[in-house]
Image (cartoon, rainbow, N blue to C red; front, side):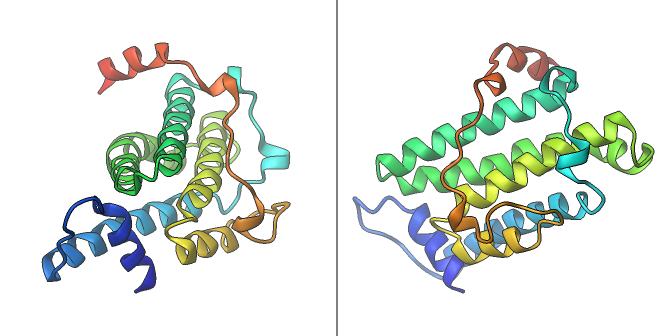
Length: 192
C-alpha cells in the first residue's frame, strides 16, 4: 500500500506532468514484489549464518563474490548521488536493475549451487552467505527512505544479532575501499 505509493513517487520525473493509472501501479507492484522476493531469498539463505563466527577475509573471497561487493558499492554510490540530487526516479531505476539484473538473474542464479549443494560449513557456501549478509543489510538501509516498511521488516527478520534495533539507527552505508575494484568488471563481463 503505502510503500508502493512511495515507490511510484520515486519512479517518476516530477519536473514534468506525472502519469498514474492502473497499469503503472501494477508495474510498480511487480517491482515492489521483486525487491521483496529478492530480500526474502537473501534472508532465507542466512538462517545458519553468524557473521561474528563465519566472517571471511575479503582477499579470500572468490572473484564473483568480490565483484558482487564491488557492484554493491557502485549501487550505494549511485543511490546516494540520486538522493543528494533529488533524482528519485534514478533510485527506482538503480534499485530495480540491482535486484533483477545483478542479483536475481545473475549472482543468485549462480550462487544457488554453492548455497544448496555445498556442505553447511564449506568455505564456498560461507563466503556466499557472508556476501548475502552484507547485501541484505545495505539493501535494507538504502531502501529505507522510500520503502520504510519493507526496510524495517527486512531488518527485523535478519537471523543474527545486529547492533541496531531498527534499520533507521544504522546510518547511511559507506562501503570499504577494498570493495571498489573495477578490474573485476572485465572478468565478470566475460562470464556473463
